[in-house]
Image 1 (tube, rainbow, N blue to C red):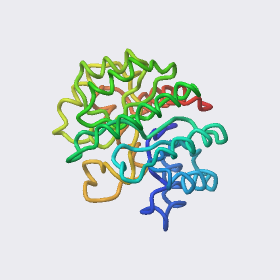
Image 2: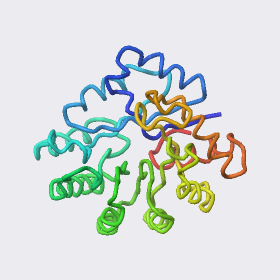
Image 3: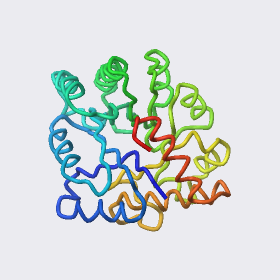
Length: 258
């Protein structure tokens, strides 16, 4: 069984003392590939170093400026991002998007960086990793304007069934992670039941978004297997079928070798 974690912050400092063990554990449980999204320009160097140093799983860098870290972003970071896209084997632009859940969110600043990064994704024909909270309609409007040929993945999808279908129509996959393991996530579970499996990819967002059985623990990429188990139960199919379909979608989206 090959599983792909399409969103894991394995570069974060919480993993510094145990990163090799965490990646090895994931590989042992069937994780073949991990996408590692960037969130700030300051962190890109460490992210690229981590990706280059660990090989138990194939680690793939994505680079972006996250909307929750506006106080750390500068306009010149966009120039550096473009240079790194040209130089490095970046699989996506991300983690990017809009977050209106944050108290006193700087929507003007978020829009500036989001649109500039959508322009880079379009220019270099890369998919995007989207972070969207309380802003699905605004993000969908911008995606219709930029029309990315390779689409992307909506990380930790939290929208409605109608919004899910709009993302799918624009060539996006919906990321399923820890949230779907909670019984109270009724709307998301209905969406999983309603839509074809081909519209989903799996993720952990480790060390964040812990699964229901581990809600007080840092998340780990190995637990993408348990996300697959829950999705399989909701769809009435096997975990192997979930793994095969979601890995196929991720390989196509990010141009990974299958």
